Image (cartoon, rainbow over all chains, first blue to last red; front, side, top):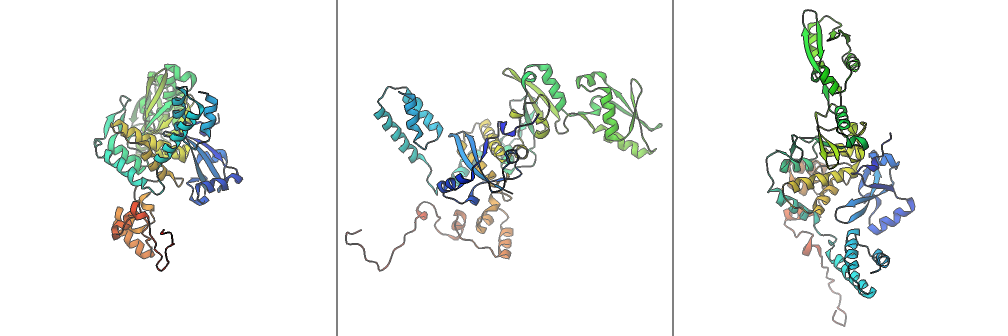
Length: 77
Length: 385
């Protein structure tokens, strides 16, 4: 049986942001890519979705205050 | 009120889902015109904007105060049972410190294991899973004695204990031969282990090794307790090894958690660790009857996980990575920080709060945030502005 870690109750949804959307997101946030929170390449979820360093990951958290909250992390070595 | 129309209207506003849901639930109760509804939504939106935190607001200080003050009221005593009978759990201030310090292993590691399908419904099947998880030592399933004259170790297996733990005699022999690198002879009611070299020391060493040998289960899990919660059986463990437990047959890995945050970070990633920090800290505070808004804890958890690894809220983590030398020196080990900064020739730009308090300047918050520039020699406009 192969485990899908993303199905775990503690893990929110992780998605790779398409290259052409990155600029738009950074513009709305008013920051550069390296100012985003980081996520390691060795992170088990990053391994599972197969993201590379430099990719931006869209994380949809189940927030206790806003119900759904979208945050971004950039993959680093 | 037309639900579809309302959803469409609300979709235009950048408000959190929960606020929208509340507005919708409230509006659905009344029979009002679209014009009125639109006005209400608009008013709610402006109210929402007013309640947002302003950019540049010292959110961290507010969070620190909001967690710190209730923290003074927490109990200092360490042990107390929590929900699960018979298992001791560190609670109160010691536990909160443990979470924020990100200790390698918590003083009382505990796992909550949910079971899959049939296993969750049947007590016998649940016990089966428990026996796969709980560490079983040789001494749990038999008596060990040493024959010094013949240089032999004699193990008298307890058939009933073996049956309960679901270990067959062949398994036991195989496991012993493999782990101790010895030959085991089955003499019916007892197992005889012969030492290869005739050395008294070797014999005693083998006995010691045998006593601590795990025959079945996971080494870290010292005890498993089965409890019925609602209509399913749940396992609680003393000791934790998330990675191994998640792979055990019958365990629902999707709903199995531990209170060891570093272990979660390693197995499930940084986002799961963030969730775990929030949950553990909130549970600890709530158990003590303290109501701290989640937002403060969320801020702390965000800081702790922002660079992809869980870092502690201390001088080896969040506080130690501040840019300002003076700020770091004001926190802990003052001399070391100043000395190192001097050696490296660090510069402090006095951008933060602590630094400015130290040098006696207005901090860059509130009134201090505004800078006035007067242009000397430039005449004002005729309209008096």
